[in-house]
Structures are given as structure tokens and as C-alpha cells.
Length: 549
Image (cartoon, rainbow, N blue to C red; front, side, top):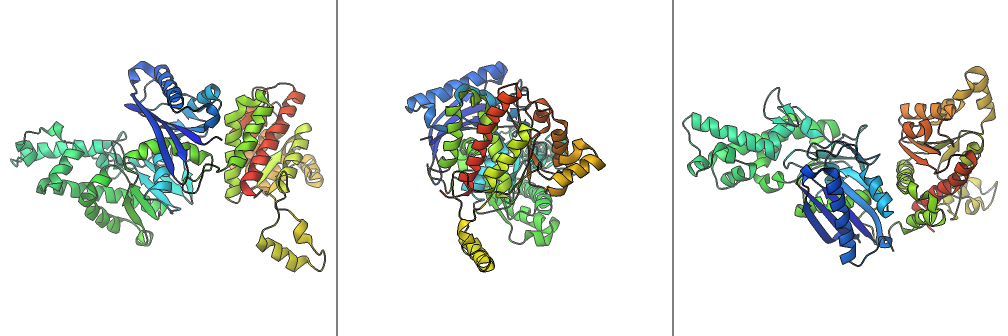
């Protein structure tokens, strides 16, 4: 049974490798930490990460047959969809690193990557102060001011995976520098920003002839940090308390911008807010009442993070759980075993497809998320790929491995409406996953071919059928079919997710699509032979996810 998860928490100072199980929560079973030593570059850190992973499995007497997935939490910028660490400023030399793919190739299990602030947001949403919320914002309020946004029960990553970078918001035309911007939310409210403001306040008080108590205690301006200033404020020092009122006011002003933009029901704040809530909250709430839309404040709860020192450790595990659709508050060790059974069977039967592991899981997640949110699947291809398009729709729209009987409510409705015409119809019909092949509409296709352009027939159908949130699957053995590429381009313009099923080097489809599965073959017949088990597996995984056995 694959009932263990590996987490990699990668930071500029420290890295941690975690082993965890999931059973109505996340249980951390083992941990190895080491200094990142960024001066040694990526290759050194990668080998130490892998050695630590292997050490953890060995000392827990586990093989890879027990590991379901690897989650990676890392500072940005990164591209979580492609699984690439781009160029984090605290990790020099880590440029365009496809770490999940490297781990998948090395260990043969799926690996997933997420921005560390987003990963922490997922933890607090599922296991901490955000439990039960559908719209939540998490703020790190640590060394920096990072953020993660949960909107309508989904992590909001943004077009270029930079969603939630709230520290860059400007609060004043000038002021403390944070996130490379003067007067920014991070400059005013992060640990680094608070420390710099404390140093400046110290210099101003001394110059004004009002030597603060901490200077009398022997601390120079550069010695003042958020933590030290909080100690004086909690001890009743008037200057320190006034200082934290100012920070609280700036915090409230930043929160007001987020409330107006996102209308969350909950804002969860970590680190400094957890330790200094009593010092910050009065001024924060006053600023919120003054600055935010009053109606948006109704029912808003601003709360300190609850997962404490385990937050960073849990975050990397949560990356894998979220990618696999596992809710740790509900999941026992058997969760999604039916889905994974189809996934694992594919690679057991077709070892050559092992290079597609990560891409198959990414494709499943893309399709699953669309269907969960009321979307549908559109499929297009030519020749043999046209037949595959129809085949996919056939597996999705009726029972494949399962019978899929109608729900009680739908059965009753069909029986009531149809009993006179076709008695018992409700017991024969099966539930479907909505899908349309853009291949069999002869009148429409020939009209477009005659009146517009033969290559634009699928694109015209996308325009008519598609709604934002749908998925378009484009099938081309070379990846270069122009009519399929045109349909993908229109789909992207309309806000659809796009999935390519290709071969060879992936062609233009691999570059155009949000996700692509590239069969390891070059001749059309060989590519199509691999496409069949690939899409059969995706259809079976989706059926197992949405229907009871």
C-alpha cells in the first residue's frame, strides 16, 4: 500500500526532508534537516536532498512501493504547473530547475512543487485557523510578507504563478523598503521591515534627546529586531507600544486592500502576528474599519495561524496532498486508492511509459479539477486521433469499469417524467462525465470548411461550445496538426485549460498546452498505440474519482 509521503522543505538557510502518513490529519514520522549552503550551488544541495530521502526510507524500513508522492515547498519565483524552480533570490544558482521531474525520474513516484507561502496557506486552510473557509487569505508575516489566496475552495496561483505576492502592494508613496519597493506592505509589516523601522525610531529618539529604555540597556539601533521590540512592548514600554500601534495600523491598511479585492471570510496571519497579536490587533482593526468596504467586513475573521512550528514541515507534505486531491481532514490511508490503482497499473503494463508519470498525473489533476468545478471536456484530433477523440468521449459519458447508476434524486426525476414513455428508463441510464468530441458534426464542419477555412472547423466549435473552466484535449501524433493547434489557441483565449496528447518531441502542442503527455515514440502508429492506454487510464482514474464502485 502506498501510504507514505515525502516532503522537501527548501529554504535559503535550511532544508528539511520529511516523512509523513495521512489518516484524518498529517502525522510527521521522521525528519532530517541540513544547512542549504547556497555557496555550493544546486547540484550539491540536490544530492544532499536525495541522500536524506534515501536515509529516511532506509531507517524506517520503507521501499518506494510504500511512497505515494513527493511534495516540494520552495520560495519563488517558480512555475508550479510546469514544476520548475525559476530563480529564487535566496537560492543563487537554482535557475530553471525541473526538480519534480528529476525526482520522478530518479525514484519513479510523482513529485509536485509549490511556492512556500501557498503551501503554508494550504496547511492553515485544511488543518489550522482556516478550516471550513472557502475564501481565505494567509499571510506569512515573517522575515518577509508572503501570501497565499484560497478562492472558492481553490488555491489561486495566478496566470504566471505569482498570485498572492501581497508584500509588493504599496501602502505609501515612500517609506520602508520591502520586496524591492519603498512604502510596501512588506516594508512596513515584515520582520525585516519592522527591524529596520525599529532601528530608525531608535536613532530618531536619541537625536531628539529621548533615549529609549533599550538604548539605556545597551542595545544599539542595529540590534533592534521585531522580537526585541516586542519584548519591550509587552513589558509596558510606552515607546515600544506606540511603535507597535503604528505597525498594527499599517497591517490593517494592507489588510483593507486585500479585503476590498478578495472579500475573504477569513484572514490567517502567521509568525509575528501569532506572537504579537495583542500589540497589533487594536490598531489593525481600527484601520480595517476606516479603510475597507464596510459590507466586506461583515463576518470577516482575522486570526493567528494555529499550526505553529510544524507549519513549514506540514507545508511540503500538503503540496503533494493538494495535487493529488487528498483532503487530510477526511482521508484515511485508503483514500484515492482506486484512482492510484489505475495509475500504477499503466506503468506496470507499459514500462516504456514510465517517463510520462508526472505528465499523466498532471493531466488527471487538470481534468479532475475542471469536472469538480462544473466544467466539461472537449476533444479534437484528425484521422486516427479523430477516432481516439470519439473513444475518449465514449468512456467518459457512460460506464467504463463501473455501472454509474443515477443518483436517487435524478432517478426520481427521470421516472416521474418518463414513466409513460419508457418505463424503467431510470434504472438503465448511466451517469456521465460531460464530454464532446469536435469531430462528428458533419453539417457544421463542412459549412465552416466551405465558408470560412477548413483548418478552422475545430476552432469554430470551441467558440460555440466552450465555457471558462472547461478543458480542451488536443490530440496529434506529431503535435503539429494546424487545426488542432488553432483550436487550442482559441481555447486558451477563452480561459480553458488545455491538454495535449502527442508523440515525438511534442511539436507545437507541447509548447501551447498547459499540460502535455508526449508518448515515447515517433511513427504515428506507435504513438497511437501508446495513446490508447494513456487515455484509457485517465478515463478510468476520473471514473474512480467521481463514481462509487
